[in-house]
Structures are given as C-alpha cells and as structure tokens.
Image (cartoon, rainbow, N blue to C red; front, side):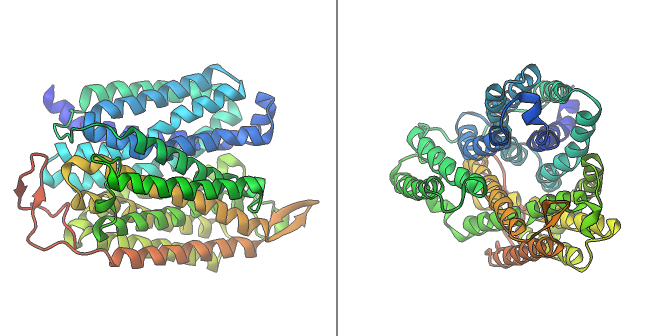
Length: 481
C-alpha cells in the first residue's frame, strides 16, 4: 500500500494542478450568457473572473509561507478544500453575490502548484524530481487547454450548474486522494507568521490588480484607477520597508532581490505575459466573423478544440524539458522556451488566416511555455533554502499572474484601438492582432535575455535534500547551467 501511495504522489498532485487551471477558465464560456442567467449586469458578472484573479494572487505567497511554517500538505489540503467548497457554492446558486464569493474561494487553488512543487522537492529522490516538477509546472497550461472545450460543451448542451457539480466531484476526489497519497514534508521553518506583512501585501496587490484588470472598463485616466495605482505604490512601498525590518518576514526580500532569485521572478513575469497573449488572441481571432476577411466564425466549442493540441503538447513535452534541464541547466531550458514562444508568434504574424497555421502557431507557443514553465521552479529550488521553497515558488507564480493580468490589459488596449465596423459592430482588425503578436513575441525575447543573465551554479554543486545534506546529482535534474 505504501508503494502504491508513493507511485500516485505525482499523478495526484498533477491532478490538483490541472483542476486549478480548469477553475480559472471554467467560467469563460459562460460570460456572455451569465447576465441573462443571473439577472446581473455585465460589469457585476466580470467580477467572477476578477475575484478569482485577486484572491489567487494574494493567497499564493501567503499560503506558500504558511506551508513552509506549518506543513505544506496541510496547507495544500486547505487550498483544495476551499476550491471545492467554492465550486459547490457555484453549483447551488444563481445569485451573483454568492457566485462572486464562491469564485474568490476558488482563487485559493492558485497555491496548489507552488505547494506541490515544494513537496516534490522535499519527498522525491533527485532522479525523479526534475521530470515531476516539469509536469507540475505544465499542468497550468494542460488544465486550461483541456478545461475550456469541456466547459464549453457542458454550457452548450446542459444546464450550466452541471459544470460546477462536475468540478465539485473532481475537486473532492482530488482532495481525498491528496490526503491519502501525499506525505507531509518534514521541512519546516518555524516562527511567528507575519500577519502585518500578509495584510500589506494583500492590500497592495489588490489595488494593483484591480487597476490593471478594470482599467479598460473604468478608464485608465479615471480618478478611481489612478487612485488604485497610487494606493498600490504607497502600500507596497510601506510593505517593502516593513518586510526588511521584520524578524520573520512573509517574503525574504534580501533573498528575493539576489540575482539568482530576482531574475527568475522577472522572467516569470515576462513569460506569463507572453504565454497569456496566445490564448487570448487565438480565442478571439478564430471566433471573429468571416466577414472580416480573416475570421473563421468558430463557436466557443470549436475554439477550445483549436487550443487542445497545445495542451497535449505540454503534457507530452514536459519530460523532454526536464531532460534538457538535466543536460544543459534550467536557465538554458528557460532561454530555449522563450525563444520558441517568440518563434510561435512569428508564425502567427506570417499567416493568421488559415486554421492549420493558427493551430500550429498556438501549439508552438505552448511548446515554448512548457520549457519555460518547467525551468522556472527548478531555478527557484536551486536558489533558496529548503525551508522557503513554497513561499519562493508562490512569489514566482504570483509574478506569472501579474504578467498575465498585464498581458490581458495590453492586448485589450491594442485591439480596442484597431477596430473596424462589421455589421454595425466594432471588430478588431487583423492588423491589431498582428501588433498583439509582435508585442508578445518581443516580450518573450526580453524574457530570454533575462534568463541568460541568471548566474550559473558551480558545476560541482550537489543536490540539496530536505534533510539539509548535500549529495552528488545523479542526473542533474536540479542542476543549473
């Protein structure tokens, strides 16, 4: 029985990561119909996406730090439980206020991936860690690519509550399996939890992400948005000072600003930006009316199917990315991944009218994302003490989230300013989409430059285990370049 539990650890954690990604996209097919289904305004409905984004960004580093202090498995089960409860609430109601609260609870699932990666580092032997971490990182894209068409089909052919009943059952199953199959890590960093730091980070990030996510709707120069940005700068500035003075800070800023940690965080921000533009633009482009001259007029279900090859690619190539990291180092894998993303956007710029080219370009971007996302946690694991792996990876995932939020706002700004009237409605032009591709590809190349600037580890350095000892790497799974 113990051997079976050990074999199931990685699949169970990967299930949790994939389900987290599904939760982020599951409402996308519903958004056009939710005002009618709930009797709420379109602005209120949009908070079903914004609430998940905000709570996920805030809770990622907070739950990561709690995991390092009180037990990673314990906090992982808490995150999965909150996600499942939120899904159950969505299944039981059509009240927009309850739905927004429920979606906020689901945002806690964002901490599943960094907590799982930290558990894998602590529990697995070195020869298995690299491939397991790569798979765990790829679940973000795999779950999104698989979840969108499945959710669209449920919305099209069944009552929309059925979708949340399904995610509730899977979430409950994932929580029980995690309780049974995953061992608690013995690695702890005891001390008093930094409640003041958590509050400051929550307020600062909420102001920042609300400004970024609502700027297009409320107006970028409106007093509310400018006030949110100003408040974010002020609060995060005070938070930074408080963290430097705290005895046990929520985020170790001295460590976080060292080149080996800061540059992977910057690369995560840029890669998140580049990755997210692919899903955003592809979905809108293929659904554009045929009257535009470039649009394919596909349904949301067909659109999801177009994104499926990318998800399958991420699943199949995650072991390959781990082998590249073992042979050449994680920073080289990150650089390769970002270049591949840029190449995928190059394909999209050359031709975005034929479906097969659109699918090919999207799959190439997904391939690059697989390499980049698998390398980022490996770089963090190499650079931080064993007692800070969950919180450090939580900050890295937070940077990806901020990059995605900024990407969404930037893409929307470009497309809004490049429209033409089709059937009396403003539709983005092909030129607008091509500009978005060029922007995302350029950001990917900047991420490549950041990855190459990451200091390399000494070739003789061994793999640190949870016990604090050092052993020679057997396959280089966690070795730097």
